[in-house]
Amino acid sequence: MSKPKGKHAWTVKVGEKGQIVIPKEAREIFGISPGDTLILLGDEKQGIAIPPKNMFTTFATKIFRDTISEADDE
Image (cartoon, rainbow, N blue to C red; front, side, top):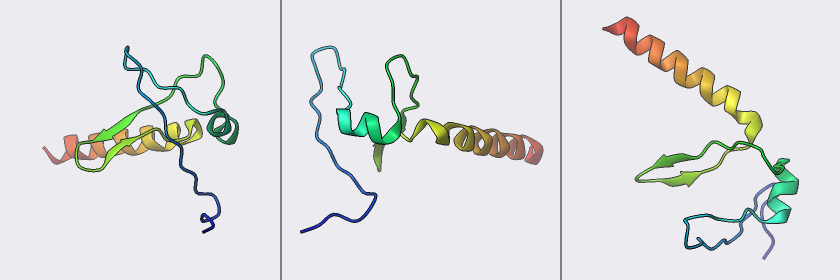
């Protein structure tokens, strides 16, 4: 069975300190380097996501736009 293009899956183990190691292939695909700061998103129903770092601006813009819109509605 072949995987859909651009889709990937890896397994990782959580260490005693709650840390995970991002697999080398994933780091290479997503351009993650030592010292990078990642954003970790969580939804209690859907789970955890670590979006590519170039998506941070998109997420931040949406979060702040929604927050401003909600404040305007009050």
